[in-house]
Length: 211
Ligand SMILES: O=P(O)(O)OC[C@H]1O[C@H](OP(=O)(O)OP(=O)(O)O)[C@H](O)[C@@H]1O
Ligand SMILES: O=c1cc[nH]c(=O)[nH]1
Ligand SMILES: [Mg+2]
Picture 1 (cartoon, rainbow, N blue to C red):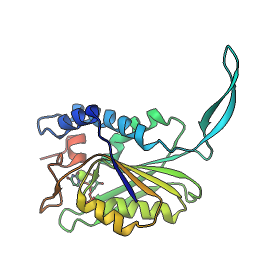
Picture 2 (cartoon, rainbow, N blue to C red):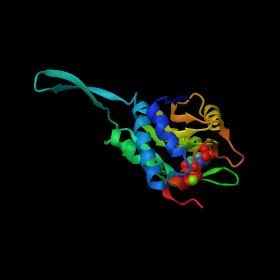
Picture 3 (cartoon, helix red, strand yellow):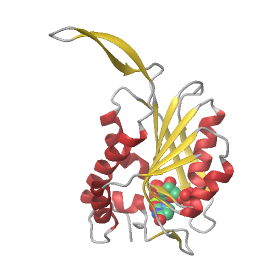
């Protein structure tokens, strides 16, 4: 497993406003959308392409186009849904699958309540969207399911990650073709499993359901 923390002033600027407890839901959604597009630029660096012949108004030349089969984008509901538009803006021809997962607030164990993805992912590049990698339970379970279905190249885009979650991913997904692209590796988890300094509950902040 590889992890890549994107070091860019625009990412840091947008992330700081996203973290701010005073940022309202509409602004939070807009910033999450903008951030995922910036992270997706890095995350798609190795998207598969084919060489094609093209003709400009001046001459014949070669170009590239995205390979078939098309990449699959999988947002993890709820909060990952807020990253989908920003991702498909860069990959408009991608296919989209859905995983609904929820973390128990007491045990911090993740469970799956919705699963709508192609059964056979053999030879597919997959991009998983989840803003928060905290304990790592959610993302490890999601990626194991993708690999079980045959995915041979998985990239997770997470706005924030915690070192504890990164370590779980490294342990559970050792030797698998998985990359995590993130805007930040934060300090730690608190006693409730929240990322510190973090941004709170991403789903609640995105959809205005906190409190
Ligand atoms: O790394 P973990 O410890 O598993 O935690 C991360 C998960 O927690 C949040 O989802 P949540 O369960 O709050 O669901 P929601 O998106 O519907 O709010 C977040 O969006 C991740 O999916
Ligand atoms: O800090 C955290 C941890 C898990 N899920 C969130 O939404 N936020
Ligand atoms: Mg939540």
